[in-house]
Length: 67
Image 1 (cartoon, rainbow, N blue to C red):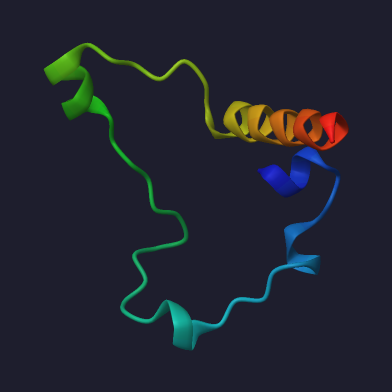
Image 2 (cartoon, rainbow, N blue to C red; image 1 turned 90 degrees about the vertical axis):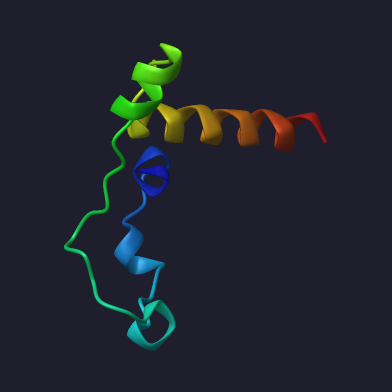
């Protein structure tokens, strides 16, 4: 998601090494489930992963511009 925010294809920059990852793969995507947290605390996420990626990229750009 972060690579997409800056207009890059992650496949051009990331190389997967199965020997480092190890273990059984659990499918193409690992997905968390926040229902238990919500039921215990009432907390609910206000943004999705793409929104979070945009926030991180924008914050880093601001930090770099402030230097």
